[in-house]
Image 1 (cartoon, rainbow, N blue to C red):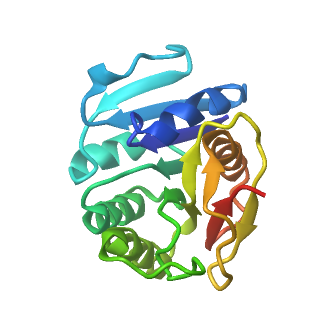
Image 2: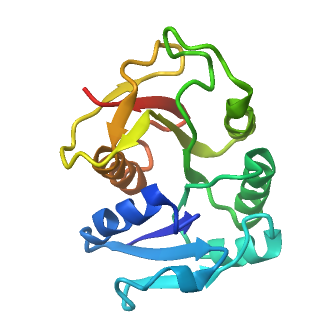
Length: 194
């Protein structure tokens, strides 16, 4: 059984990914969000919902107990959230983190200039990369609702290709990363439509 904690479980990508994860019979989920009433439990036998703020380290550590993977899908004070996640994961002995960031944080999108709006994403990625966690940072393009699952990956040192990616493509990749802790371990991946 793979136990996955989803931080920011009411986010657009997380909501799209939950059914993909539940297609895997060996998966149980803990959905962590600030206002639990905003989400309905899709499978009470395999899903538990916890109301909490990622910046509340005690609550976060409690939610991390017994988990195998943390999938973070957050907004707001990204750097402080990343620090709290790293510290909480260390405290409970959890290593595997899938963290959603944004394309452009390294200035890797051809023809685009780096903008300060990406600072929180870049800063949080830098903290995670400096940690000893077994992380995978995903840097997706703009989300589309295309049903197709087709994507290409670029490494941190490569130019980002394309500008968009379907939610379904990202959800498919997140499932693979959650179920295979060695897959793209300690990598920062650009994700866009092929």
